[in-house]
Length: 198
Image (tube, rainbow, N blue to C red; front, side, top):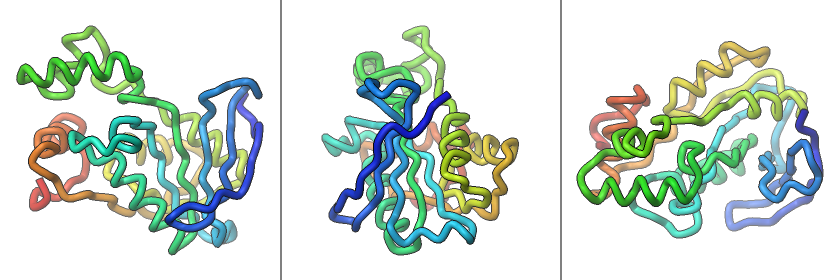
């Protein structure tokens, strides 16, 4: 079972957050994280974002996806309204950065994100969100508003012991390079996206 291994207050350009590391082993260099806004009221439904790691989008500001912008938007939103970002170490839909770059290479030859993963013999999306539910339980969160466009994340909450109060869309307008990526999200994965932005 995962447990809290360390925590500290971290000031960011979006405000101050309590950052909490969760793992089974205190020597884990890649723990899951909870990023808790300082004004979060746990007596009311808590705004929550399940966010999977994306080094290309978050660190290097890749234009192929909107992950970095979604993380920034979630940090801004939770700072303003209270909330928690559950940051999951599931790079590249949980295929890892090496396979993700291999998939990018196939995308350069015309495949979409799903086709590229399948061509490599990998799942279209191998992420799991049960650990996010475990983290919310460890933080004693009972009621949430989920910031997501992904019906799979909604399903995990609905099937858990946590009450889903509402869903808050978190849509980032497409750019020329992310249009195809977002179209695949909508068409293949059923993400709840507005066509006007794609």
